[in-house]
Length: 156
Image (cartoon, one colour):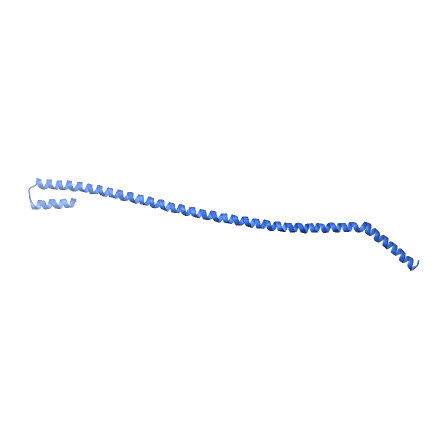
């Protein structure tokens, strides 16, 4: 075989191999590569969508957290206001109750004072009458009168 025939045979075999490769081998490989490229592109697109959805979800969560914090702060402020109102109301009621107790004690003390004065008046009157009876029963004697008066003073 000459160089030309070998070269020609190699050239024919090469073209047959190239045709066979282009017809039967290359299409499945390109199809697999295209499918893989589309899967990668779909995956990247899904990742981008997931990233935007995650950002959106994070934003919603932050908004909800902010609203919950505001609600909690408002409730806490309301609770503090109610607590202060309850304390003030209790102070007011305690002051009123104390005033009533003081007024009742003053009234009772005044009544007891009036009763004590009345009792003292009755006792003084009884003693005066008793002293006068004793003075009038006895003879008029300065020494005896002085003795009776001193006893009357001690009884008062």
